[in-house]
Amino acid sequence: MPALVDTHCHLDDAEFDRDRDAVIARAREAGVDRQIVPAVDAASWPKLREVCAADERLHAAYGLHPMLLDVHRDEHLVQLREWIERERPVAVGECGLDYFIEGLDPDRQQHFFEGQLKIARDFDLPVIVHARRAVDAVIATIRRISGLRGVVHSFSGSQEQANQLWKHGFLLGLGGPVTYDRANRLRKLAATMPIEHLLLETDAPDQPDACIRGQRNEPSRLPQVLATIAELRGESVEAVARATSANAERLFALPRT
Image 1 (spheres, rainbow, N blue to C red):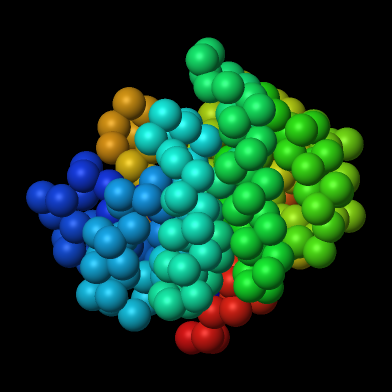
Image 2: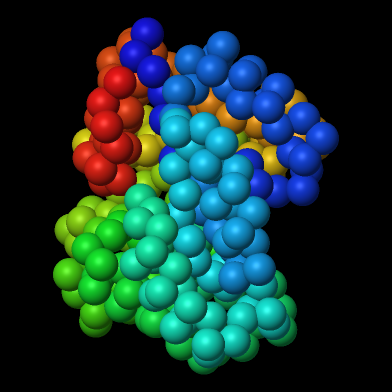
């Protein structure tokens, strides 16, 4: 089977500090050859760089996550630009908008989101976008800034929202939630969407698949996501693996294995 790419995995998270090497080894054994590791705040960038530097198949992305809004400062956008120019990551992110958690000021979220989109555009890098109950606002922002490409990870929006994102050069990342039987809308989208717009992800250590509900997620669980999507589409796991890995290579400019 073609090697898989986990396009969203927080391997730098403290959850993996005790056994990170073993987690990476299990991923390799499961056929997950490469992983995109997005940042969440400025303080995490040095550790993320160190984690990715230890293995050439781990690819860093740097950004400011909307859920950590309280720790972000305007100077972090300046530092992000400098960091990206020096480190040359594969993407900007994780960035975006979160209208689910109460108390996250939407205007301030928008400020940091737009700032990161402009940085991505200036460096000709894709963006990794978080959009929870905020897909329409994300689409409006992408449309306004223009000249962007990227992925909306853990997509949970509608078919029409998906259509709009595809028109603007964005792919959709699907992970553990698609394995749950009750995720009817998401499973229908996975079954019918054009495969050239699909990426696989785990969002580990979060969003475990249905078989490990409530447990720590790992990139080695990506084959379960793959198998579910292949079954929903009525296609072979090899075909879906080949297409989604090619999509990841194209979006993130990864070398082919």
